[in-house]
Length: 239
Ligand code: 16G
Image (tube, rainbow, N blue to C red; front, side):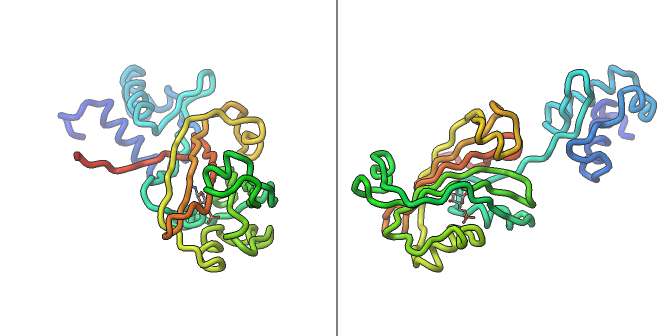
């Protein structure tokens, strides 16, 4: 053991290695304080200091009256790059799937027609889906698409395919850019049920307006992500 490293730091490092090695798994309780004190041969104060360090780093989570747990790991979602849910989940080695909640063609109301730059009452698809990664609910999405451009979209096609691959391969629409806004929110009852979280649990809401290479808006979507599952990341540079 390196004598220059404080004891609590060395213990925190050992616990961290054990978490990364899967000895303690996400969502699992770590052994009680007394047991860990005996194992490391340290006082309660030193052990608490080490645990506190890992709580601050987001690796452990203290639940009052119940113990200290290994924090569930979040998915890091870069905010650059116009990618689809399907691509995002596949790139992490997981299997994406969806459950269609609603699929309708409706006349665009004022807000939708403003965003999609169309006349009010022009037909739009309205689709809502629960999105899963390895059958675990990650997000719920509400999407409007101009029906005159997005031809031939059906419930069956959406259930089996990525929306973006349908737009590109079957409609020949080349997606080029999107504007996004991120808001913090609390899960409504519907969202909580779909995402299997408590009503009022924190969620991250992304509004996206997607445009084709010709600059035409082709999608307006609202994605509600589980706050306990996602971290949005972006690299920035000094300008
Ligand atoms: C992403 C998009 C969403 C799009 C969906 C298509 C964000 C914030 N939203 O979730 O706008 O509709 O992908 O996914 O990234 P799909 O091609 O897998 O159906």
